[in-house]
Length: 298
Image 1 (cartoon, rainbow, N blue to C red):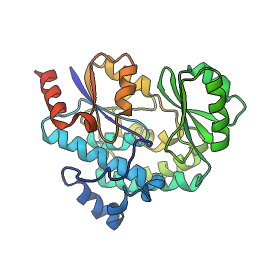
Image 2: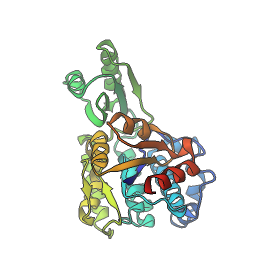
Image 3: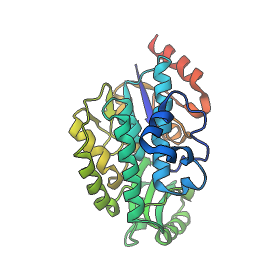
């Protein structure tokens, strides 16, 4: 039986999320980013995509490394959107210092392309076909396939609000604007993704030590060049989180541990016919994760 580490995307961030992180990750981040690190998780900074994404990277790496230090190592790693970067670091495919520079650039490129008026909205209670019918002709895009009846759309604030109203009229249980200020995971970000891919051409990736499971394709990638492509281009590709979870389940992962912050992926994992246990590290704590991992491997 295998252990899956999952890493969340934007929308889970909160002020103070980098307080009291274990290990030396904050010190390493300060060496690369300087004094910026000390204000990354302030309410003001978290209004910006760059700070949000860097905070999620740093938190994910810090907590995953703490689990490894406590004897819990992943057999598979997977991240949703920006979560793919800490996943790649923990898998040994991407150096942490390179990840910091690339994520800083990623956030800047995304925010510069769409500084305001765009974002993501989650629609719950409708199927993909129903959502596709709703967005036809609206200029919005399907961004995330998180679960069978949890679909995220991307676009302008105005167009998403119109779709959300129509979705609720058609029986959606909820339509919620997410705390994401850019239209991620659709063709609107194709040009910034190409610029990031150019930056990746100057970085050396390695073959991962454990399975790197793409949240965009639901497939395990081993070749460094394919992981680089996955990381660079995932901002413009649909998230297929449900497929990723199903793939991990088929690979006999039976304990999914979600890195902080939040527990969104834990809920989504449970919705994808997951056959094992799924916990949020932030909510359950490191001791519980260690206990479950030891029991699984016994």
